[in-house]
Length: 201
Image (cartoon, rainbow, N blue to C red; front, side):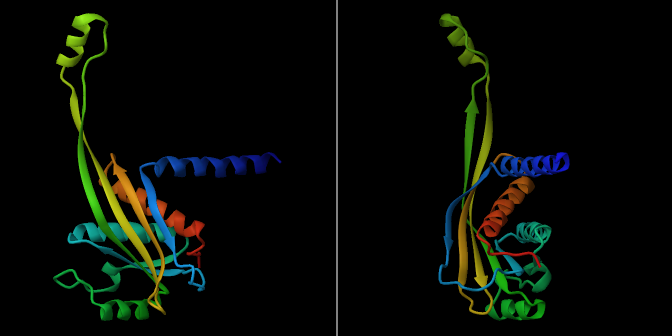
């Protein structure tokens, strides 16, 4: 009885940590193709669409790593497809890759919008009287920059080439770039699991 209580607490603790770590990302739109009757996918080709080669590689590697941690086979377009100079993947190249690596789904993420905001925080503390007001507003404050990144992620069935699932995410980035990427990927994978669209092999 004591052992099961400890195990239950461990699960609860992990769940709380997951919520805290994903607090900067929310899903603004989640759409599933109700006509899709196939099995959950278990081997995914991961593609990120971006004009920056380093950003593409970083995002894909992190996505693949988290999918594998969830027990799902995955490979990045970086590993599977020789990237052309114009960074544009042709359909034939993608089809050749999914045949070679036996993928049953392709997941594609692209940037919808990125917004930066500067927030000024006043220095000093509040005091009573006219001098307190003067003192509070005359002290130098500081400026921070927050970034809001919106992404769209689509999951496609390889056999039919039809959309299985689509989600839009919004991430308020206050931490490092790597942490923000990990957070949004974690939330997206969690939604795929909740919708029973991916399954461990």
